[in-house]
Length: 329
Image (cartoon, rainbow, N blue to C red; front, side):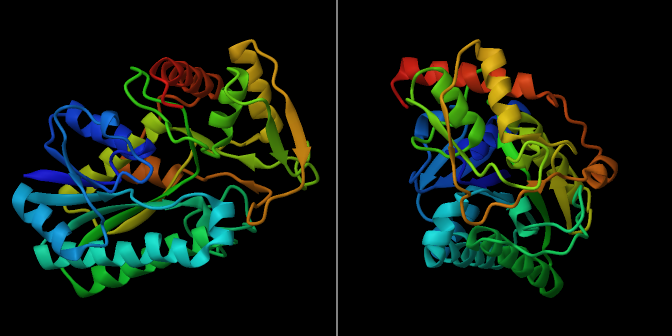
């Protein structure tokens, strides 16, 4: 019996694969390598290169490897890109997720974990946001993930199929053991961009929007260490394996940092100066979004261990230094 991880060669997916293999699970990865890297996987994991939208391929992988659970990361994640290419995002994030669900149902896979996003909330009317907060996504990225949540709900009602959807807040950092991290060239994650700038990989960076209704005028986000996020998936998997019902959980720490505060943290940890240009707002960016995480802590027993901005930055910087030696990015 094994666990299928889609998008397992990517940033969050590779951390998940390490978490599972470290615990002794058999893992098979399905990834088209559009943004992922084969070298990001541990040797114990089996890799199938292919598209999650190929139902016959997904079914054959499930059957060949005796898959009993699916953890679904594969998808596109850049908010501004989704505004420019909505149909591409609905194809990759929604249509292909539907195909993967069909493969799961046809193959008798009953446990499914989905990587959703805080972008489903949009400009939330309450802060911190709870799983019951009104869902008003501001971008095709958020809408594409919400559509997948809806399909999961309806599929679970119609079939012997249970799921957990985890709504990520801003994921950052890298594996504390230095085995994997955010490696995509041109990635837009703030902490990665700031770390690249501090290490001289970029000549400078931009701060998008300085006139938001926040304490310093820049966007406020809840940053969660990727290691803690991977462990949230482990908790969700244990919940489903024990017969737990389908559910949705926020994944964040419950505190927010502004863009300028993050830049100061990178300066502090790296002991480097950063050139940051003030630029206009980007479309699709809410001013502030912070998680209420009491539900996942209570229901799944999730206890974050890396809830410290400087520690997140420290691990991200170490990974960027590693990439520089590999000449990867």
